[in-house]
Length: 179
Ligand SMILES: [Ca+2]
Image (tube, rainbow, N blue to C red):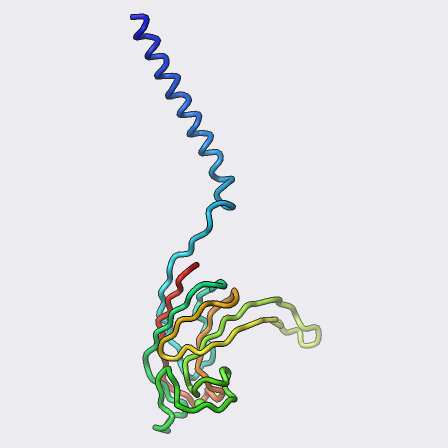
C-alpha cells in the first residue's frame, strides 16, 4: 500500500512539472516570435482593369524587393478612337517612338510602375502637398514575370502620352509570389 501511494505522488509531481514547463514555453513565445519567425506573406492573385484613357491604375498591391510578379493580360484598346490602325492588344502597336514612358517598348503596350513614397510635404508658396517619390518603370506586354526591384505600390498603365482620345481597357491578372 505504501509503495502504491508514493507512486501516485510521483505521478502527480511529474504532471505538475509538465504544467510548469508549458507555462514557461507560453511565456517565452510572445517575446521571441516577432524577431525569430519571419512574416510569410500569402500568394496573391488579383484581376485589374486598366482603362486606356485614364492614366496609371493603382493596383492596391504593395510589393517588396525580391518578390516575383507574374502578369497575364487580355483585351484590346484603341489609342485613337475612330482610327482602326490604332487598335492593339497588351503587346502594343509595332512602333517605338522613344517618347513614351517606357521609351524602348511598343506604343500602347501594357506597362508597370513600382512607386515608393520617400517624403510628403506642403509647398510653402502654393500650399499644395508635394510627394517625393522614386519609381521604376517596366514593360509588361501580354505576359511577363518581373522581380520587384524596390519596395512600393504597383501601378499599371499604357505606354502612351496622349490618353484622352483612347478607348477600351486591358484586363490584367497579377500574381504576386512572396519571398
Ligand atoms: Ca492616344
